[in-house]
Length: 360
Ligand code: MN
Ligand code: FE
Image (cartoon, rainbow, N blue to C red):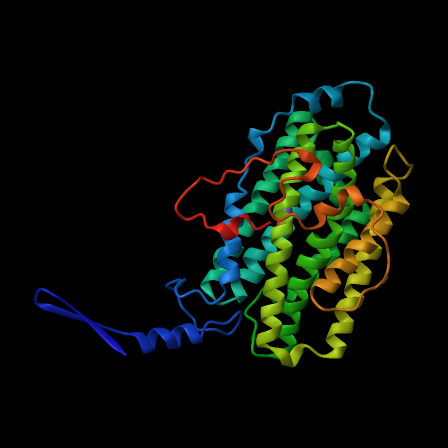
């Protein structure tokens, strides 16, 4: 089907069949190579919708008041454990956010081929920059020595092991890889599973829970608010990587074997064990509302929620969520009710806003 446009002396012919061929050649991987970033027509509508949700949630660290946090940090009412949780939170996340962003830019966004997937991954990487920046803002506001944060991910073995666990799924994909080879497809699927479901989806939630528990006790209102915004962003990142994983698998069903599924479940088991060791370092002794055994149980609960979300077997069927107050936080893509606080939305009322933006 051709359509021609006559403008003055010139005629332009557009062939819709060719455009449809290009659309049909869009794939998560091994799609049509294009340098022209042809977003339209969208094949992965979810990716564009998620991109819009993510940018509507935009926030900047400097908008958050830190005065109360600074007074608390400088005062004498905090326990050693409460201070330690803040240090571990800042220390772990200032490495972890960067690792996630780096893997997106150098691995995932390089290997996927559909432009709308690259679009949403670009936003994801930018949000990791915002998170890393928010940690810098916390460190400078509280007057924590930045060398101490660096030392945490070099010298605390449980942090090191968590970082090694994710980095090792990334190394083999940082070169020209033949993505038609099923073994390489599995490496990428595994990378997307590890970063989305094991790291952002499970290993981030130990500290998220601890810091939000302090926030719930009216401690660290500024830091708590930043972690709420971060957690909301992470919910979108987990969803992005879950969708990406599902579409990658459905377009490459030959890799979705019982062996590969079992391997992923075992990978999650390893992620959970690393996180439990880390939780025991964060909470060597209990504090009000903070008990290592409960946080470990919470990790079991979340890990199963993630496994179930991509159709894999659970590790601990029937395990209960020990923190009902945190249940909304697991998946709060656009949460508003969490702790009754009003989350600022940077979304402008514009013609682009449609009803389905409000469904959550
Ligand atoms: Mn992040
Ligand atoms: Fe993230």
